[in-house]
Image (tube, rainbow, N blue to C red):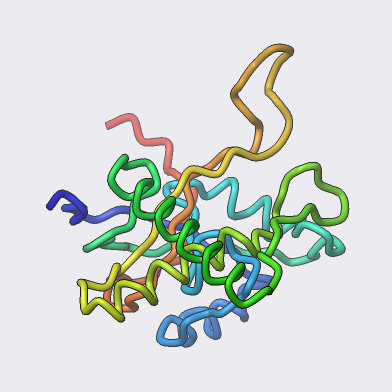
Length: 197
């Protein structure tokens, strides 16, 4: 009942250079299907976090540094969202995991695993999480339930910001857009103007 998120928000996505922004915009109509993306298949944004998107573009995990990184902004409506900071949605994901584990055991297959990537202590290759989220979407489709337009989750990442802290330097909220109609428009971010009024 409360899975619809009213209002628009800003998201940022990383690009390798300014020219690649055009291909990013063109690809909004194609679902990106990486088996290691933790929120499942779709188009990814950092919620209101330009700096994190720029950092990811500049220093992609497990890859060499990008010389001309760029960030593209988007105006987003999450619409009907699987929000992993909502108790009901967390329960749905847990049920999907149990269903997937049961199916895998019946078929004598191995369950996918979340893994670290080069140069990071975090589990950035999230094959298990991706499989669980995608299983949830498939189960909803088979039951003819309303499809989720987006997935939203909190990602705790990086080192603690001080000794004994549970705040981490790269933590962020990430959004996966499954329904391209959630993306209302793109923009090139600009620096804030110092305006005294």
